[in-house]
Length: 552
Image 1 (spheres, rainbow, N blue to C red):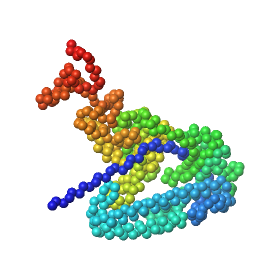
Image 2 (image 1 turned 30 degrees about the vertical axis):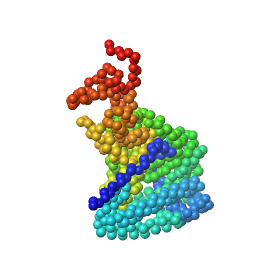
Image 3 (image 1 turned 60 degrees about the vertical axis):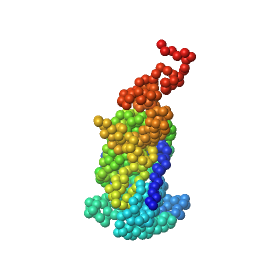
Image 4 (image 1 turned 120 degrees about the horizontal axis):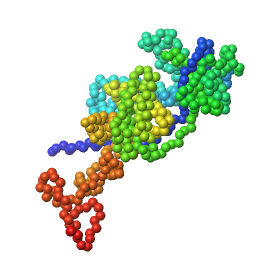
């Protein structure tokens, strides 16, 4: 007796989320260099930044000590304590920055807690499976050897202990925040590995811990009473009470000899300053370049949301993000690729400033090309690699984890949204599920020719654009139910008949007799046309039979 055949059930694809138009930016931040500063100006800026930085460190320590017991009264008490050492406005800016930093650390703690829980769940699942059992795309399999199984069991115990400590801190409201950055603080004990001397490290440490920023005030002169920048570029700072002796202007103000001129968004900034609308400023020292910079930021009204169909009325540009380039293809209103694909390369190695410049350059090229194509929408994937970055899920695939960890998905989408807002192009976020697989399956081979070789990423950009338009990724639906000819009517998912140069529903060019193939006698030639009798004809339209057959 033969053993019964066990049929494995194929997993159905997960549900695909609907595309949506990404909301526009809610604020603007522009930076410029402070030029023409004297030694006295730089000395005053360093003294003010160091003094306010020490107050900010004290305030952050007090805020972390309050934990979850923080309230309106504790905030007021801390502000009153800082006011004699600075001013009321400086104290307000310090306490607000402290709360923002504490909230960011709290979100990071929650993310770390979620990462530990995900890793422990994955370890427990893999340890429960037999050795060597294969996994699926959705869940990993068992470990390869007994040695690896034992090592992972020890790691599970370590993660459970770490999770208990983090969960205890979270429930108690305890946070450990380092002003200046934990990475820079650790470099102090590894100067040789960091390539720094003690003086260089001290200079970076003081620059990171310096505090010289002020919130905007609507209705005040030039939009800020603490750090004021006039439309002509004159910069003045209200000095804290202990440093009032350095003032060279009335009301304990120090006017810098240097000037600040904003080239980018300069007219908008000048209009706000002249109208006394709120503008926030931050002055900081760039150690690498040896220059002082000032950053101006303000809020802008949210742009009205564009309906999805209106944004897609003139086609869309599908963009597939990769580790070293953006693959883009222009699609018309019916989901058909137009012209040739484009590739915008960038290099994500080096410093953070270099990576950010590379991303901005690639996005600028993409937006310029989209404007040349007269497209009003760009479709991108709503990527989130939080689960795929897990060491427990892809432990042996170190290069793959490094690849996806180096892709700045959130920063790229935020940059693209802010840059596209000025051009009037809408950004549509789509579900990234199966775009690369289905795009290569249905579009890579049909779009490849002798003069053009379509890559997998180019095909994925077509899939992304079609998903944003609401069309299926596949080029056509299944054939009709009866046979492969058009017996049940044309296929529905294809281009409109009126679109010139595109594939449309196929109709027979002439009438054909039912026995045409039999009369062709096995040749490959087309069968003879239908006889001139109503009974033997097969039409595609409506026939009107006359009372007398006209055979003339």
